[in-house]
Image 1 (cartoon, helix red, strand yellow):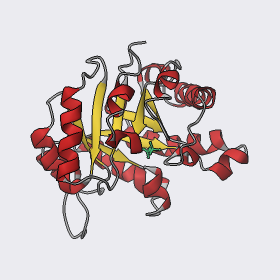
Image 2 (cartoon, helix red, strand yellow):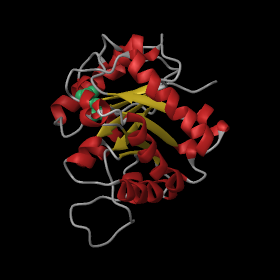
Image 3 (cartoon, helix red, strand yellow):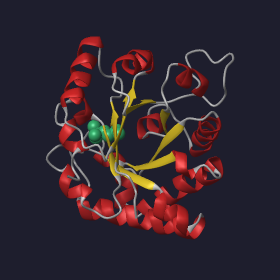
Length: 248
Ligand code: PGA
C-alpha cells in the first residue's frame, strides 16, 4: 500500500528554550527510523527557533492558524507567516481547539482550505467524545467531521494527514485499544472510499492520537489502517524516539 508512517509530536502549550534544546538534542541522538516521517507541532512563538535548530529531515508544524493571509486579526497567525519562518505544516481542528476555543467544522474547513492553498501541509484532527462513543455515535461523528473537510481539501489530499483522536483518550492515559482504533480507522477509510475515491482512501494516511506512549505504540502501529501517531504528552519525553520507531 506504500503509506509512509508519519508521527507527529504535538507539544501543545509546553516547552521553553531549555526544554526545546533537550528535546531536539534527544531527537538528533535518536536514532530515528529513516522510513518514518516526523513532524513536530510547536507553539507559534518558537516555530522559527525550532526550525533553526532542528535537522532538515524533521518537519515543523504550527498548531493552529487563521483562515486568511493577513489583516486585522489580533493574536492570530497566518499560513503565509508559518511558511515564512520555514515551517511546512499546520495542525488544524485539534479537539482542544474544538472544545476550549469553540471551533466548529465550518471554521476548521475554511482554515484547511486556506492553509492548503497557501502551500502548507495539514494534519486534520477528528474524533468523538466519551459521551458520543457511549451513545454509539462514533462513526456518525467522525464521518460528519470528515465530510466537512472533503470540499475544503478538494484535490489536495496528498498534502493532508488525518488524525483520529478520540477525545476521551487525549491526555487521559486511556488509550483506545488497538481493536477500537483499527475499527474506526478502517471504517473511516471505507467512508472515504465511498465518498471521495478508492484511490484516496488507499493512499491517505490516518494517524491515531490519544495517550500514545513508548509502551503501547508498537501494538497500535501493527494495525493495518494505522499509519502513524499524533502524540501529545509523550512527544516531550525521550520515549518519543521509541514511538517514532514503533514499526521497526
Ligand atoms: P496525548 O495528546 O498524547 O497527550 O493524549 C494527543 C493529542 O492531543 O494530540
